[in-house]
Image 1 (cartoon, rainbow, N blue to C red):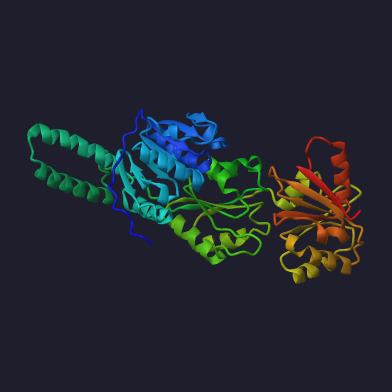
Image 2 (tube, one colour):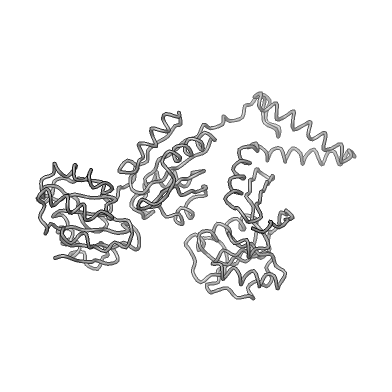
Length: 463
């Protein structure tokens, strides 16, 4: 790796000045929002625009980037694919305009920083674009070190500066006087006398929060199906840890929290559960409002109870915010009831992860008496069928697979139990439903034809 370039740190005054953003995804939207906060006049160029960007007060040009777009811009932010960023960098270099290429240091002449703001005080850290994740961690460390009332210190120092200028106090002497003043007031604050900035004598600062964790269910995927409390907790969070079934782009549009994916899919590599426990505890102990966001419901095959136990053992206050489990939402969104009068008076929710455990659970279920809903079982469809057939379930028993429930890409396969192993799943998450209620769902779908109740496409097989 080549040596990082030596950078000159600067803070730009962008009030009323034109800044070009190339790209309009969630990351570009977050950059545009930061530019707007700095008072910039933002123009966005992109052929497609995400909902978050569309909601911002920016000028949007819906087409591909052209080199002339850089004209009259004071700064360009390129948040597009690498080939587009390369074109933007070339156009910026030709016109002597700095380009910040998001997560693409090769095509950048300016680098964004991890920023901590306390009133008029701004502290920034950069890794020259080589390690943005590390810059984020350093920023978090600075947030812990810098006092919350640093903005008041700036105001106090500004007042003293005017007085010292008026009185002709030399510059070298001003720095010593300011240091003495800040040290004295910082000590007073920790003795409970009051914060710097002139708070009333005897007043105490608000207590440092001990931190709080919300273990939240995200439902089947559609953010419109979040509960009101879930949406509120997500919007209010400081730090958010989410699973692989949660859409990170959707989160970026709905929260200003720092979001980290800690999940894994289909047995792939991911963050181990013990590490998740540790980061939840550590983050809460730093006084943060933490959301642990899980697909479906956190207490239905979500390991939410394990995390609750770890938090309780560490003395961390927490709450459980239930979500709609995909065991219920998946079939419902596809028009399939899990119970129906005269057809099924109960349901059994099982995990398909371990075929041996699945056989033990199904051993006590009489064929056709309950609806069986299998979560995390698409990779073991053959074992599911074998376990049911061993217990006497007929090969013609209706079965269904609901893929990507609650998303625009939702699809449903319907067929006989014996055809379930050959159902096309394309590696997507899904729910298996087995029982006569699938036939009721077919009737619902036929009656609601044209209303899209079963998703984008309905596939049939084995009948």
